Image (cartoon, helix red, strand yellow):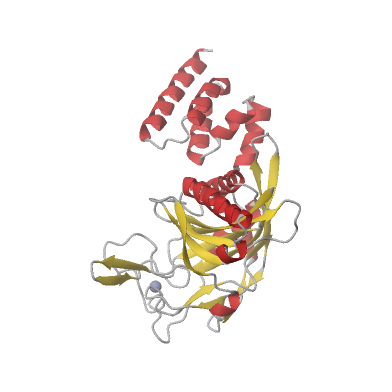
Length: 378
Ligand SMILES: [Zn+2]
């Protein structure tokens, strides 16, 4: 009776050596506020300079997902005050992002593929961190100015399964491209989920609720399920207009519910305007050439494994699910193993994919060694 509509905004922390607008290192610093300078502390008179490495990494994602890479893009200021943002604005790309209109293909349970459109991917600077201790709080600006790539999807997903499949595909793609470590526990790959429902057949979207800052595939799935149920019940009880508001909600892991955090701001609330300190970012031919250097991506690998190595399609999907596994598989083939012996290993990996223990990876490695042994005897 109802259809779920989901769009995702994914924040990927780019693994550049230095911050987006200054030469401070992005590496983990032992001492708070030690990786800082006048620019990322927002001291008066300090001027930002765009990090070319961040731009090239954003462009590389663009080329990988068949997007338009704009040869000229611009930076805007998004005004808001938080203690961890000393400039009282974030530098982002609202009007002309570096990457626009891409696509990601996800595999559905029935064996077909679905295209998920990508609206844009833009560069922006991360904020610092507030650390709350007892009755006081501290601010650490080591992270202030770290480059983020925000990847905004079209509202093309219709279930939590599709949302998770899209996220996994994007996660694996940025890791293959080596533009981010995409460590979800550390927040290098986190997402905001926009979810609404509408009666089947209705074209107009329902009221969109944003669930902020989720850093696990499981929580994405659970929070969508909760929201869909909450919104459906409100609709059926005749209180949809009162209960479902355009707002930002947070996922409460312990209680398994979403809770209202604040009303959703409109773009006008942020008083966006072009950053007067930054000229448009114009990419050079050298940057384009560098961005186009990329490894073989999962879809191409799956095709090659199936067509050239005789691996079953499902197994190929498992073997390419992480770049470590794929590179390991290829290294084993290089050292004489037979690809056919990996079917059982892939199935084992698939059956254990919900577990993240080291043990299963070790066990998998042992099986691979066994396979090589078998392979070398053939
Ligand atoms: Zn700095």
